[in-house]
Amino acid sequence: MIEDIKFNNLLAYLRSLGSVAVAFSGGVDSTLLLIASQMALNDKVLAISMKTPYIPAFEIEEAVNFTRKHNIRHKLFDIPFFHQLRENRKDRCYWCKTHLFKHMLAETRKDGFTNLIDGTNFDDLKDYRPGLEALKELQIKSPFLELEITKAEIRQYSQELGLPTWEKPAYACLLTRIPYGQKVKNVELRRIETAEKYLRNQGFVGSRVRIHGNLARIEIPKSTITQILTTELFEKISREFKDIGFKYVTLDMEGYRTGSHNESL
Image (tube, rainbow, N blue to C red; front, side, top):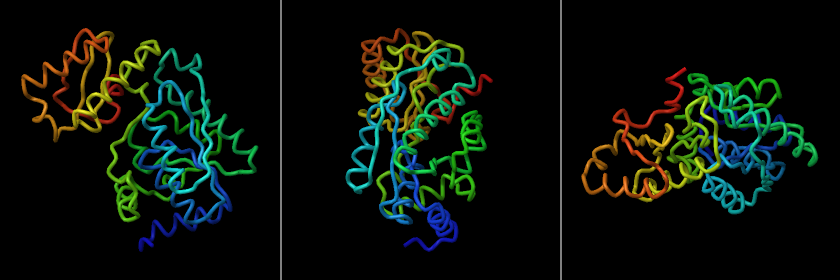
């Protein structure tokens, strides 16, 4: 057991709910929330995940494998693209959260769960996140946010519990790789997903491939920038990206940062 006031408050909060359905992406935040829910409520927990064209396939696979390993009931739904997201407006996150969480609410209530919770954390207030308004409107509970639990604390608790996600990089949905106002095409999403998978396989975990038309802008963690600065690797990545369908390939020398497309707002 973790000897920490905030973590104990989290368990008490979850116990007070009686039973919960957890919006589960397989990421750092939702994984800890799911395990904490199991610790607090035993089998009165349901994990629910949404499979969409803009969620990387590997994240869904990891979510399925995790729930299976920990014997947690899990429901997975295929959700097609809907028109508000195709336009890729700056409030896309609001429309996405509204659409997905309405669907999750309907499904969880069928199973007798009245509380749907998500892994929004206290640090999420620092960035532009219109999806938070959707969660508020739908009365989705966010225990980490309410208890002021930060990302660093979530990683700390995850490490102490031996969760494999404790040092997992953040992987936002693939829509965040496309500039606001640029209409989203499925072929572009698959191109981004394939390119990022290639970078992961080359050892650049936590990288982003932001697109600007037929140009790919690679963001990698600053700590790994020196590793990529070789002519041989440049040429190798360039060839691979052009085979994937990009015409131009660039490296962003500022490195990876959360929501860099928000800089245009």
